[in-house]
Image 1: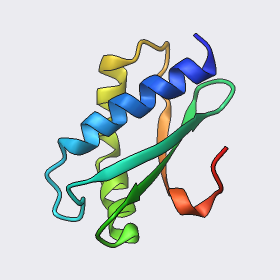
Image 2: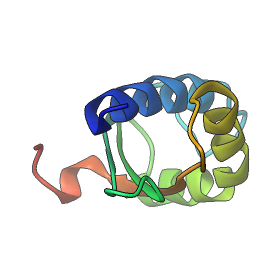
Image 3: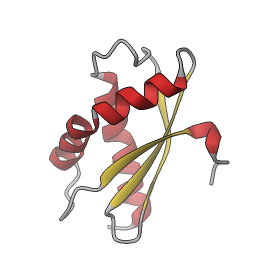
Length: 96
């Protein structure tokens, strides 16, 4: 698959999985702005934003739920290896 297809699938799966988290630090509405993957698909950088809440707490919560989110990716996106997820504030980097 092409990197754009992988990034699109990762965005969809991670958005759905974040919506199912029950952590009080995760606001009701979290937007996955974009996902970028490395050339070998070993690392996926996930850029998120939220209307409310503390972004640092949100990033901590998502990092804590990384195992669950990676399992969701492994179950729904067919890749040889599941990429390691890295979470970033979407405002840290201009859109591509």
